[in-house]
Structures are given as C-alpha cells and as structure tokens.
Image (tube, rainbow, N blue to C red; front, side, top):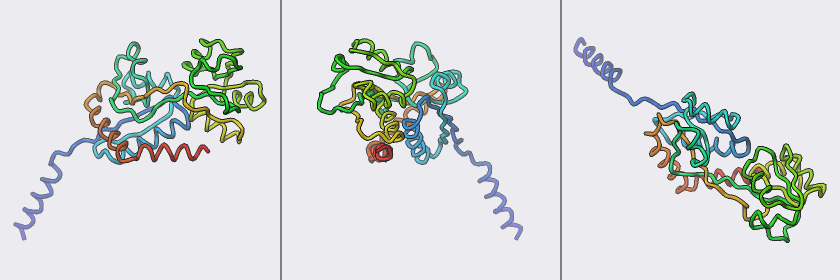
Length: 240
C-alpha cells in the first residue's frame, strides 16, 4: 500500500511540475464600427478557436485611440490597417503578411444605367461623402464634381440621395449596405466595381513579432478552407 502511495505521489508531482506552454493573452482593438468590426470579430473568434496557445479578446475603440493604445503597448494589436500609412508615426507596430479584408469605397446612387468605374466618372454630378472618411473626401474634392456635399453621417448622405439632392454618394461598401438596410431604402444601390479597394492587415505591437507567422498561417488556412468567404457572405446576406 505504501509503495502504491509513493508511486501515485510521484506521478502527481510530475504532472504538477512538468512545464506547460503559457497561453498568450492578446487584446486586439479596432477603429472600425459595425458592420466591418462585426466581421473582424467573427474572424478573430474563429482564429481564437484554432490557436491553442493564443487567447484573443476584441474591442472597438475610436480609431486614433486604438492605434495609440497598441503603439504604447497597452493593447496588443489593431485590426486592420494599411501598413504603409502607419510606419512614419507608429514605430512600435508591425503588420502580419496575410490580409483577410479589403476596404472598399463605392459609389451609391439610384441610377444603374450610367457606368461609374472610377472617381473621374463622377465629375458631371452632384456628389456627397461623409466627413472623417479621409480617402473618400480627398478623392471627391480632387475631381471637382458639379457640386460637393460633405455631410456628417451616412444616414444624412442616403437621405439626400433619396430626395434627389445628390446624384451619388461615396462611402464604405459595407457601411453603405448596413445604412440602406437600417433605413429601409430600396431604390439606392451600390455601383460596381468599387472606386477604391485597399488590402488591410492586422498589426501587432513589436513585442508580439514572434506571433506573425502564427497569424499568417491560421488566416491562410481559414481562407483556403472557405471560412473567411463563409463569414463574409453571412455578413453580406445579413445586410440585404
């Protein structure tokens, strides 16, 4: 009996003292709002399930604050950004190599008979966009359309389109779809192709550089097995 007790104690001690790999707790934030942040959340939750040694929490913050908190090391990552825009100001951030989302800015309007393939095609029309959407505001002003209207919210933009005070509005594709659904507007549509499409990337604080290959692989796997497309399709269908 004494021998059995000694053996049991030895096994228990070996289990308790054996080295186990620590789980990396990552708090990732975003400056995007729904529906884009909802898509990010769904992708990161799936990544969290697949990564045994990484636990991911996710939070939406004001865009600039999100970057600052990660750059200072208080948070661990920001989802998602154009890396070349960050390098000069945020020295402590490094982007992963695998992108799972493209930011699209699209023209929205009632007419689908006129081809709008680039910003210059909007020149003869009354065009609006939303303050704070820097890429869209800059591009709209550059082409000098017949009239320019910079409004404060997507809701205001689409109401102006609905009342024919604008010919076209330029906003983020997903945000535009979400606003149309919420306002129950049926006669305004996104025009294809998008006017701008930019690949965005998860950025991590430099202290997590060793995790870049891990995120690259899990996102590549999720794209290859169709998970990313499935999650994106589910989001699009919810906005129709």
